[in-house]
Length: 274
Image (cartoon, rainbow, N blue to C red):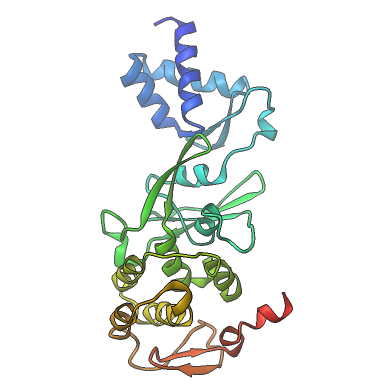
């Protein structure tokens, strides 16, 4: 294959892969096109030098649209987050934002992974890895509730709204705190509640069960919550009182969840000043 054909096939690859790893490109060129690994590496270096690619970090590249300077190139943050680890899944507040349900827009994008990874700053966005909960870390499907969506010319792995509800109640610090979590979740009109309950129980945390049970009971009419959903959760609620917030903020003990809920959450104090 001559150099001109190599270049054209590389451009085709870039068009179909807005964000990609070094190994993905090399494998596609070596196995798919019959060129040498050395030639594939030279092609990458050539296109980076020509401004057609931007190096996000070592081994990870993004395609630069025609007529755009590399420094000004816009890279979709959800596609990028999905490529930061081989198992990365957009999650927590970033998942709410991807689904169009976040109350506030952030430039902080959280993703789940089995690996220990470092945060990344890129084009004024911050990408924050969070290790999968221990209870689901070894599962092939990471506990379920992960969808793959075509987006911005690439693909995004993202938690479903059902899993996201549970995740932000399990780790509210990644959802922006109780006000942001409540306001965001309340913009969702429908959840598959069987999926919500199944994933909640899969995590094996009595505190998370109580938080999810409390949220569903508070939104019982709006979300059409059945007694059976609450029954399954009540059976796994804490046997002793637990604080809603890790800071042990005082409040009212809410039965049957054995959950001490701050008055500002019970009364939705933030709604009074919005």
